[in-house]
Image 1: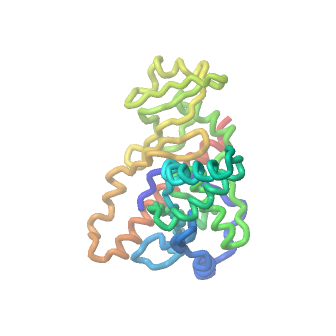
Image 2: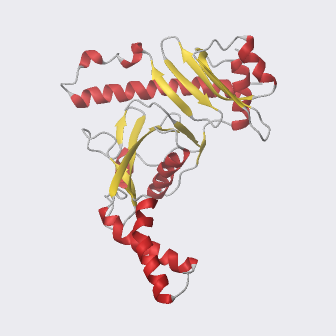
Image 3: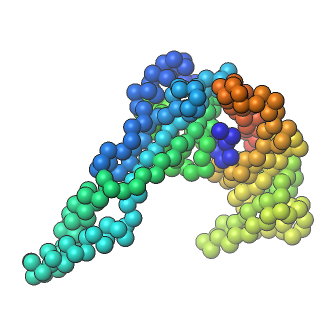
Length: 298
């Protein structure tokens, strides 16, 4: 439930649906497992099983989730099944098969094997901040995040969502932040950075568990651009800001992650409500501070 990575999107206008209407819209596109010959299936699922709701509201935050199931059918398995058929058909026709004929056999074999293939299921959690008109998606994958946005757009009709940070401004800020200049409020430099040369060769250098203010690190700013930088708060979050706006390796200080421990888990729904609110509000505050620093950067 605690977001460890995130893709964040800003809406140009708020969602027009309330929680009840959104619940109904998401339910119409609920997840159903793959059928026999279906290679993949995508749909909304309960973000929290104990809540039994497609749209779980906790104060200003709306949580929802998209489940994706894919059949695992390795290319080598398909090829092994195809080979005897190809050889038999080539012998029968007395010639090599065309690309179109081979593709036809591949489709036939895939169709036959899919019902016996194993399935891989993944759940991607998302949170919509109604006060900030911002969607936080628990994934580092741009394609998985786009799956969530596309399905949400399909369910509600429109979704004017863009990445939450301007890439040009963010790139400039990452350079400044590594120099300990104009850092977001309450944040300080962490101990990890990745830099890449902008030329065709794209030479990379990465420092981990390192003091980033040393000349050894700072000298790379002369010919490289920061692509990932760790920032941390004293008793808040630590995270890595990437040049595409994604956030990775989000960690929550013990003062946050253990704040609700006294509640225990006897009342699972109450603990879920407390933890989800704590996570969303902590992450949202950090996003506000980063976004403000990017906006105000010279």
